[in-house]
Length: 291
Image 1 (cartoon, one colour):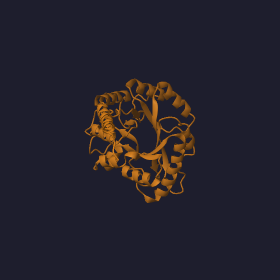
Image 2 (cartoon, one colour):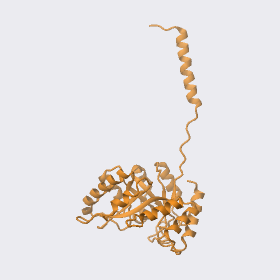
Image 3 (spheres, helix red, strand yellow):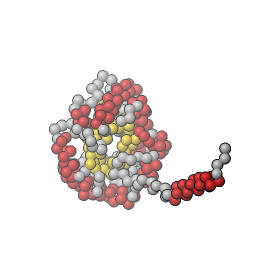
């Protein structure tokens, strides 16, 4: 079968024009990476002992996007949420506890209602797994069952559950928390990366391959300034962002690399003095990094 020369030439020119058009269209710029920063544990050691409305106003004035608090289980919940909403401060993280001891009540019976009250908010529910020594295998059945139950609840509310690895808890190591997440195997159950607890428990390891291998399972992140090798919180593993020798910029670069798109919490537990003073310093450092 043969084709007229004119037809072949026309087809060739059409293809060539298409190729040139594709080359002429510039490649899309990569999406900007600008995570929100929220204050966490801002109230625990504040010398001024500010009320929740005062904390919200302070965070807003300093340029923070939001805040993290314990999961409110009492009648103050709606009032507190209204305070944050009126101040323009987003609630990004709440935390509560799970008891993994066999036959124990896994959580306060008010927890489900408190989680449902957060429907529609961009908040992660962090859970601290307690009741047994770190890594005790007797806690696994209770932990897996409870996390699946809470994962279903979170999914129905458009939220996510994240294991908060905490020194002394059943999942004090991020590595243990991630192992539990894999066993739970629920799309709405993941883990925090809490810098200070990582450094206390696993500080001799490189966090980067852990984050890269578990990118889809990291639901929340908290950072702070830290002195490498320290075994104390105050003036050691938890400091303002302008103190310590831990390379937070490298951590932020790794989070960007793995595609983390959530907010980042500024851990303030144990930092003495006026909270406004150290929060202002941390915000100044954060802005200088321009993550």
